[in-house]
Image (cartoon, rainbow, N blue to C red; front, side):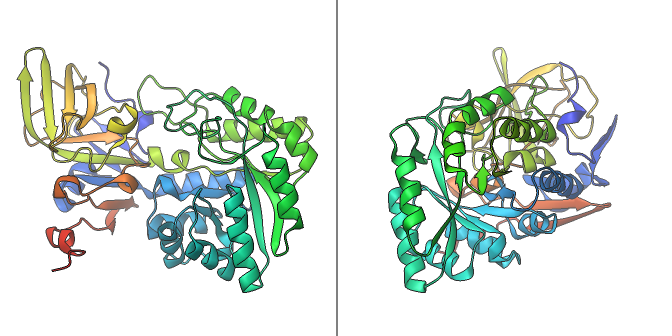
Length: 421
């Protein structure tokens, strides 16, 4: 197997025969200083992605924070021009703690709490995305109680199938998300909201799913709602996110620009007068980070070689949840041929704790080596857990030759913080 494809690494990564650096910092030095496992994020790459999204769609485009959120990334997205899409009180709280004003927050989610909606209305969010009739009632009730008008979008479900994992498809008829267009309920919801005092109807929202690689899939989803959008003629039409990214050497995915320009052109060509916006998440952060681990054992069992590392499903549950694939390489020799098929497994007490089922590393891989998996900037740390009482890894920000933690490594005493003696 050929060496790791350099295009899978963060933007500032430089690979030479005896090492790899990101943001001007040697990866092995980061491992030595901060330990493993650890997430390493390329700040310049993050900033560039946020800026490109803002330049493509303009004011109101929102970063979907569920992909990865901490105060540092919230602040960077906001400073790059983006709004932030939040779906829980926790995400909202982190964004506000980072200094993001409420009028740059989009409140999402299919089962919002009274507390979440009350705070959103009181502080004046960019808008609330209403996901159901109960959502409409809740927003109307809180807006009326506070005597404050709140901008709202209605999330419609087009009932279309997309080519993605069944757990990440969100626009089909079996999805829990959105108000169906094919039953007439979406049209009725628009009428209700338009007639409801304190609710300011400004737009429609769709989202067909995540990790979609084909632009035609997005355009087909748009086609399924274009008549409805033209009829309603809203000020805002949000097409969601879901753009796929390359995880493997063999993957292909459209660029952010090609994806966005195709959507904008398709809407314009089909008589959509609304301002078209999006909510990219994974495509903003996935390829900006790598995760590093330390090898604890290399064990051959028949024809299989198992490389066990000091992390696993508690810092990256995607392989277990979605059967997701990743590449791996040794930062000490990133240009070496990866001539040994291995399964990279974690240290949890689960047979399914496998980061890479059939991957490749150089045959020289040994105990004590640092192994890196690229494209781990999305749905890694944000889905991390304390399973088996594992402490969560730190998030290391690298830029201009400096490395600093923006989330520290959890300590053993942190595992006891919530215990009531």
